[in-house]
Length: 259
Image 1 (cartoon, rainbow, N blue to C red):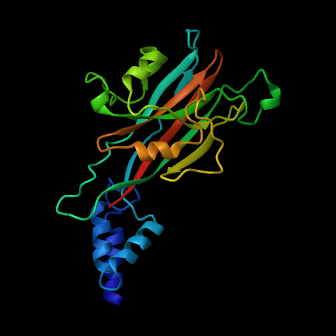
Image 2: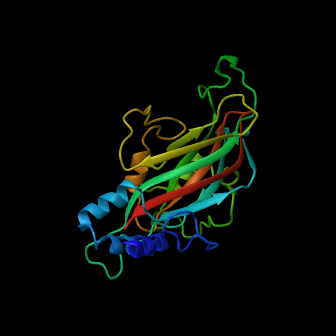
């Protein structure tokens, strides 16, 4: 038993000192742990344990780039910045495996930001009511978007080139393709940290507004269910109405999947 626990510990931590290690297991790690546990438990129980412990590989991207997504005097009065874009979703099929498939389980967005620090509606100060600086998520599906579109150049001011109508044409699939992630607190000029996690299951306690101007609120499970191999998830920094600003200091996207 002692040697087995030692082997299991090694499988769990073998990549921890690697520069590319992101705190989550690789696919090889999951396979190795499953193989070790097969000496003691049936596969169905092992999979339940791994899922309960969320022992899943993760696609991660992060940035500490500082931007000011400031609403302008254009027709739409919107600022639209591509802040992050995730790595592509891997194929569902796993080589040399006839019975196992990759499945997207959840996505976590982290954001550090604040708004312009003032409001014309003082009753909203310190709340999310009346906030017009926020983040939304969009799926980038290369097969449905223009082939010349290059989104890998870092933080990118989409609003300087494309308007709201253009955005719908650039990212037409799936439809709808805008989900509200998080708003800033109103009239707070100190950065705040927010973490939002969406799973494949609908959040029955969430406030739901499918036609919100900030994206489909409370419906993040739709994004998880819509992801296909090759898709990438974009985190967009937004503000709307002249004077509104989304001051962004950092953020990350993590997409977890089982194997």
